[in-house]
Image (cartoon, rainbow, N blue to C red; front, side, top):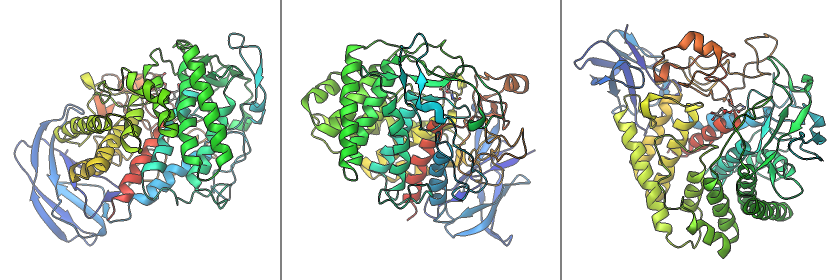
Length: 547
Ligand code: 9MR
């Protein structure tokens, strides 16, 4: 049975327009584009692409970029199969940007979610008692007020390293993308004179500041003492909470985003900027004093480990953000001395919470500074983008991610998106259209042009993921609870198949097929703050590209 996979949300009038056909045919096939009235408005022939390694399918591609007219209800037909309907229009990505960012309010801990702001999602405040949490016996002998912040994912833990990359990415979008400063997010702080994105991010930054121990180090994480089942609303979760030990990685995450935040908040709230910068400096110094406090892989009772035993990248990133904010020589020296400053950081996977050197490089490339050798920094980003563009061009589904051995990572959708961020920054640096087109075409995969014909963003497209693993958007288990909110990204194909349901249903799966839209498949179908953040970033770029 043939099928035609498209971006189910649609295509920009001036953007690339391609689709992928699954067929047995080896020779070019005729295709037709029909409009909302069923009229044929364009025709052509497909390009056979052979066997796609990421899915094992025999595929062709359709390029219908000759068609520029806007409208709804378009569809592509080839080999007797018709695609899901799609729109061609300029305004496709602003709603996605807004919804992807609105996701974060519903993840908030320590505050009531107001139903009038998120109809269907209102709930009482969860974990108010996070205001007084003891260290676990191996973590210290004091208690901290670590209330607030966002729940990490489908669990109710709060992890400094994952908070770090998420805050960084949202603030990076704020600093370097257009159209983000006036986002209306319908949050309690809306209308206070500060851009809503910053209001939302401050909720997490305040929590990060609270995770700093008296000695300047940051606790790696805090979460339930034991894992709890699904569904469990945050305010009904009876498990005691514990602070896990400090780590060098967490401390440097705090240093990096507090420094970045100080730079960005300065214009709106100078006192807050001072507070952030002081915390960042203290954290950086504490990490220098304690450079090898690693979070271990086996610390996984009641929460995930976020283990990391290589913090050279976090040192580089923290030094870069401190330098960009202060212009001080000591931080410039640390940046220039880091082995990661000249290393190839745009490898075959993508940057993420564990691999943060690219965050430093992207910010050093875009944020104005007097750093010696800045042209080389920029050139390294462009070289990385060229590599991802080559991967994408060779890929019949236009994915700029081809993991070695076709072993797709946990949260692969975020990796696909983060490689698009590199393309987007290359576009900022060069103005060359091929990078912009790469970002836009890269979004096709996330929004339905994939082997499963599924949009990975809840509420976007005809067929979309909606049963992401979550203890409170657990509609699949309890119909009185909602699905995840519109704009929630699913983790996506994960060859690791760590959960039992995936193991039972997906054994032997090829790449793109290692995914289940089932709430029990926590290894392929969770939602997380650090996966929605790149969706925000890339949607912001795409929304800017309307014209
Ligand atoms: O996203 C994380 C992924 O990169 C790791 O491989 C995996 C195992 O350590 O953990 C993922 O993070 C989970 C975290 O530990 C707990 N909250 C949910 C996160 C997403 O599944």
